[in-house]
Length: 470
Image 1 (cartoon, rainbow, N blue to C red):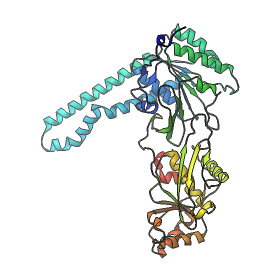
Image 2 (spheres, helix red, strand yellow; image 1 turned 90 degrees about the vertical axis):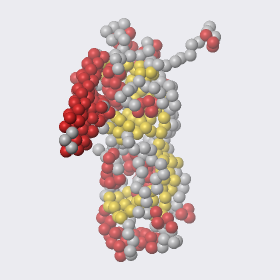
Image 3 (tube, one colour; image 1 turned 180 degrees about the vertical axis):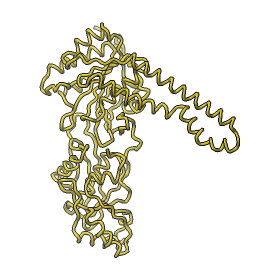
Image 4 (cartoon, rainbow, N blue to C red; image 1 turned 45 degrees about the vertical axis):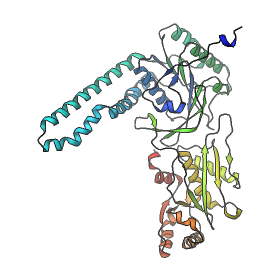
């Protein structure tokens, strides 16, 4: 029986993903742990396969032998993605950071000046330097193509999870794929494995143990249920070292790491974005901080704040909203989830909407509540000083409020001494059919506020954050 002092502490080496710098930020590690078992889950179309291919190409270029087990897609389809999406995306990033690109910019900006001053010799030297950088860039592309061709293997002979252990023993540990450092299984539920079926998953867990003992890093690609939970038994998450969870929100892909044996868990999302090649890169916008969304209760301005987040691993989603009707909020969550490419039904909501004098909730606050949820979900600010006026129906449409509310709002803005908060309002978003009428009422009373018309929540997204709408 070994004593504690005789047991060797486990130390991990890491496969660095040089072309995916955001991965280290997401997992707080140097890269993929050698012998680590990773589970990448997400909705259909969230970009799981392209992300796996990005990892494979990056490692293959570094000289590692990579094996992609295609249980769903054909090898020819994956090859097409690599050649037309993954590699061009990588080369564009290299070109953007290369001396060739910098020299091109310098040459374009200085060519007219150099020639106008008769400095043709200097212009010629700049041109030669750019051409040398371009030749170096093209040589690098050819070298990377060669390394990917030599080190990237795709196999479609495995039919499901049950065949994984035997394939690993015969083909990888002592077979033609010996020396593989990174394996992808895409996907583990490829053939529609029933969630109640335990035998396939037992074979998968056996495969995981053997791969870990051999020091092979494995990325399992899995599906999610309609409710957004990771598909499969609960034991699946316990049998992997790290869970990467991708959500789909228009062009954005919030990434969570709810389990991580190699570093801290990440319950706040790292927001990624899908670029023109379908590859994932870090989004330029940062997490929203203080964002003020205003509504009008009929008597007072109401500041609405919402925090939308993924529940901690193992916790149930829910709504924390003191003094607000839970059934109405649940209905509003369902309406927002019906917007194309948005699903917030399995998230946790913390909502602060203090109604003056403890008055009951009114449907006129549906619109600002919906906007505050969307603002937190996308991690984007709503424009400062925005007031959202209207009701939201079951079809996501913005419905106008009564004319009486408009006149009360006018009185509110005309009496700034009694209502100093009104000075913060810069623009009003309202139903399109009454926007002109509201603007005319404001104009007649000398109130200079912008009135921005919107028909629906989808139109509102295009108006507020056009860069995230596909």
